[in-house]
Length: 215
Image 1 (spheres, rainbow, N blue to C red):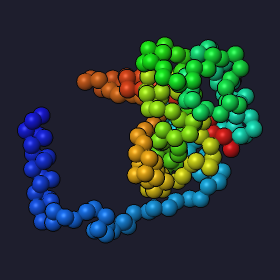
Image 2: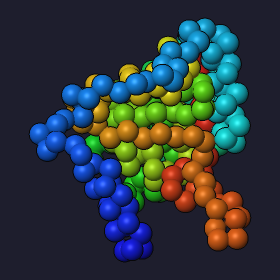
Image 3: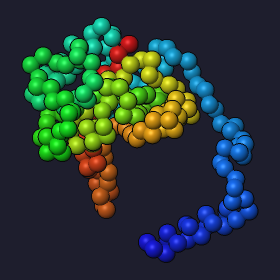
Image 4: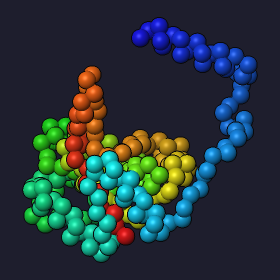
């Protein structure tokens, strides 16, 4: 491992050997010839996003925005959720009746792990890859909220879905550069493979991801 690290650093130093010490990245124009804008927002884009998310073994449901609270309550009822973690600024109308909402006012890791799940919004959805992006912004909370509970119920508004990854990166720039917030990319439930290539779910995050697309 140490030899590999040393070799990587050597290659980086070699590639940068002719760069002036005072030069900054923004001073050098780069050719960006890849597609930076995709399909406009609309039913077809939402359908594409929903299809991609479902390919990751996530449960996806498209619901009218007015019916979102009822859809949240129904999703919790199906799983028998009784204690649900939520960011402090989760919209009040999203709180499902009959479920104890644990708003994060400093919840410990034990509280997060012992809950039945977590309910959040998101920053963006990417139709190209079926990826949901969180940036610790409104209705998302801190990163630990979506890493420890075994079930993640995530709301994606239709106007948050973009077609391409470059579009998402451009929209995230203020959160990263100005607010210095962490970015979490979610492509389906947490999963990995052991040394024998057996798929194991729930190792690095929720075992179950359910997505409600509010249109």
